[in-house]
Image 1: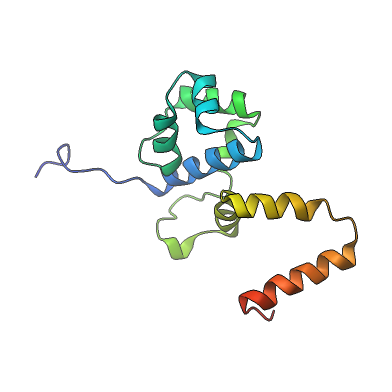
Image 2: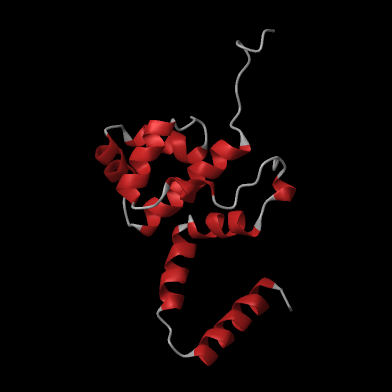
Length: 135
């Protein structure tokens, strides 16, 4: 079968850029519809970009950067050339995945408002113990 007819799967970079779009959108408390309206596309298209199903063009990425108030380089942070396997993911990718969940985002927001450093350390200890991590 010719390669032009084969189904394309998202590349690791497309997935990474999509996750970064989602991360910043959620940090700005924007819905997919809000972001889509701001750049003139549907929320379904935003979903496809965020999943990495559709590749984001350079001009669209520029629009996202303006609307989300980040430099274009933000979308590539944590991505290194040649990273293809999930086992090779960088810690920043793990952070992006955590912050792209509603629970992770809520936990992060609440945690950063705790001023008592000792209490923060105790909370980290509690979460590690609950997850079975000892270190």
